[in-house]
Image (cartoon, rainbow, N blue to C red; front, top):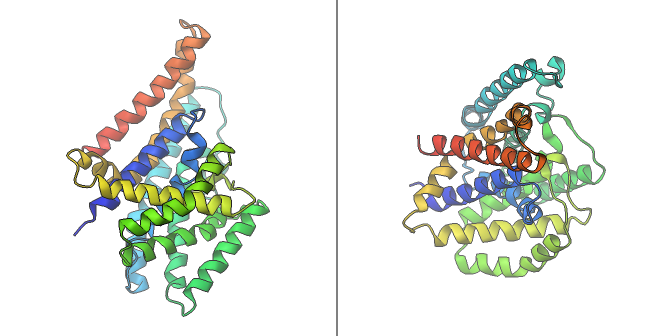
Length: 302
């Protein structure tokens, strides 16, 4: 039976992702970034199963790698068409490679990273020394972040994300109840508040975390715990199905929502003719919001 609270948690998460990308100057921007990507890695670990690697790999190719190829190719084509219509930065050899998704559709880094990290974690969890292996990969990831060593295909991020895959699997399979979740949140919320007030920067995709690793890990755990608590509490609410739908199609929203950015130069050129600077900025923001909501609703209600 499908766990609706997990879908709701994904729905909350994807709203935060879209919000964070569309409103980079909003007051809660840094608060969102403290936990929204660790949340998705955590949720990715909730459904790990004991199965043959061939079966496991087939599922991940079908649900992660093939969608990535589709969205990457579509985004590349869209970028090519848009940039052919105006002068811009388009490098075929750079953009056609999968070394990094940054110049084509940046959010796709998560799909690549999840595919690599979840395959990595498959073998870690089969080890007799699973916890030690997770601690080791987390240490390697933290070291790569500290020294800003960017391995290809977001492998640096994959090392670090194994910790959240591990936590997701253990919390979900052991059936951690709301009282324990609340206890974890109360323990970690001082770090979450401190990190938010002190404007601690966290951006897993861009290889940015605080040099004090605890100011990355503990706020992330707090945000994940809060999201899980909220998703469980509203699971039976009348309109929770909206969040469930968004959660079920979160991968598609994740891959598509940033593409409205390619249209901003065209909208800017058209609006500048008739609009003063202040109004221009507000209209551009509105266009981005409307395009994002429109694409999200079409997918979630399909």
